[in-house]
Image (cartoon, rainbow, N blue to C red; front, side, top):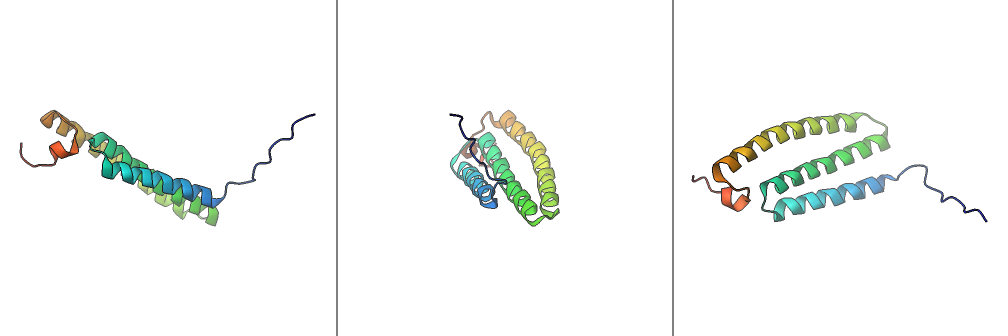
Length: 110
């Protein structure tokens, strides 16, 4: 007896994208608040930005408008600039302090 294929929905509902976006944002926010390594905090900020991009794209696709794609593009440009400047700052902090722990570098003393 041949197996019947499982019927998949014709499209993914908007709520699934929004649930995934909320999960990504919460994981990013939790990592930002709870972690002490600068690199991990930096990656959590990027994760939150990507969650916002997913929301922009999902609503843009649902409403059949280009606005969300344009906002998402600008968020990616800002994230790229933030990555370049942020990594340069992280490298400088590591060079001067020999640590990447947030608590160790939070003071302004040398």
